[in-house]
Length: 179
Image (cartoon, rainbow, N blue to C red):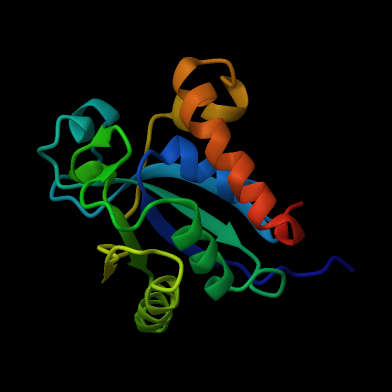
């Protein structure tokens, strides 16, 4: 008889979703990672609309994971360590509120866990953490070409210069969690 997997959802915005997707895809217990948008005021936004800065959405990822293999708290710790949660509405050269740091909790338990993780993360950052935390469950899938973008385009300039170093750093820092 097949083992039933208990799955949960985690949704994070940590700047460009190409970076965050590539980091989380490699973790044990992560079943899938979908690029998309959360936190805005229009339905079914597209990438160009979101990057225009007028939709209120953040580039986000939806992580489907098995909590028996990797805990939500662990995902949060990886999230806070693999992007800069001290930068308001930006990640490096990517500027705009659609690049904000934001944990979109699925329920009040995740919201409490996110606040605790943000508090833990203050020990690894010198500047104040500006990550937003809210309970929100409406996730809009990004256009298909955004999924597995780094994997499919490793030599593209942005991927080589921005995504690849983040992925290497994450793999080194969380080696024991990697598939």
